[in-house]
Length: 511
Image (cartoon, rainbow, N blue to C red; front, side, top):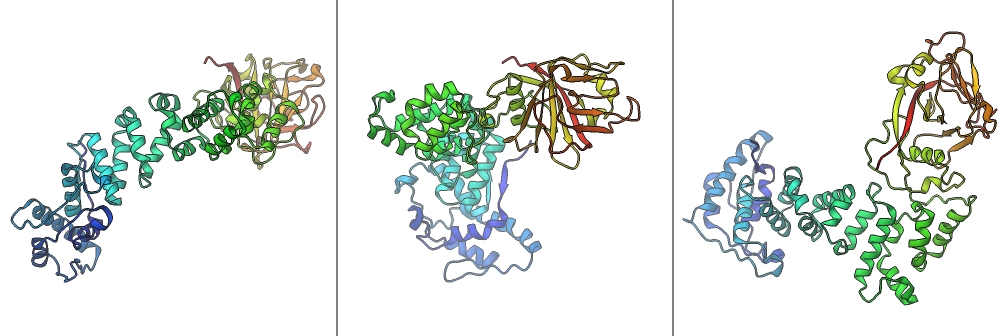
């Protein structure tokens, strides 16, 4: 069984100063009076050090090895003095300051043992008592102990903290020093917002906490839900306002705008669908800056409208089972899914919209795992409907690929295949999805090409194949050009080498 006995030898000099400082050292900070221990100094003089008329212990420690041998014995000596009444000459007054009224004698005794001996044992402490020790340590400015207790609770009592999350949350944000606990709370809210917010009065969040939450890229909530939570929070701060914004005066809007001034810039309005914007944001248009509102309106009505560079990208979704790829991320997957379903395909704001993930991308082939030959491609990918191919070009970060709504086949007699729904595409790199090139088929009779000597081949516009070999030869002829599709997806017709490629079958997800 792991011991929860923790020692702090490296900070002993600091604690000895606290324990032996002149009367009033604590009083100036926290209204706690400590009178000097005559026995404390006598023991220190006779045992381990030199007495100073200023009441401060002086050390003459020559090296690290001496320190390691010296401190444990010294700590034990002062623990014995603390527990011995023979030379009792200490008065400790707690509770005069209302800010310290919650430090009980039992908790303070634990704190004293830490100050005198650098030891704290949590084996027999309930988590709620450990939290009280943490609060006391924070109030007494014992940063070393405060940091340790935060880590102890997070690493050992996470289940209890989830169960009593509201208590942990309120405690952590009452102080500016409990940063690890604050981060734990914010991480948990971002990861499991529905679970946490149901157990927490959302409107009770401080502005600092609300801002730290909604600024996160990984907050696992729909953007429209975040907007409505923020509005609810703002209404709670302005109880004179009715929920219906049509009843608000200009002064009412100004008052609400002032309340939400640090929250509004963090809402990713461009992530919203057009119906969400019209139904649930438009009624509050006076809360938004005029230029922002006009840009939002244009993004839905004018497909030629150009996004500015300041727009926040949609929040990242932690969804298992969407795709296992070494080439693309969920932002690219979302765009491909929109193109497949023909959603907002003409809008230049498509990359700003909330991630659209209706499909599971089932991995059929990965070149670096399965090989780079036509034979292996047809073994793993033939007779599978609705596939997406991603190709990473060697010595660049470029990604090219295409969507085949039909199936692939290994044909002895090479032939073009007809479809109206295929498309090809390119991205400058994995993280640049603002300016993709999407190219739809124009000559539907030459949308795909079947041959046992090629891999995934989209007409003659994206060719992945072999020249001068057989179907077991690695790809040696790869290029992109414009013939049967509407746009060039690369700036050059030159051949390229493949660093890796992946083929996925898309399957409709069951929510």
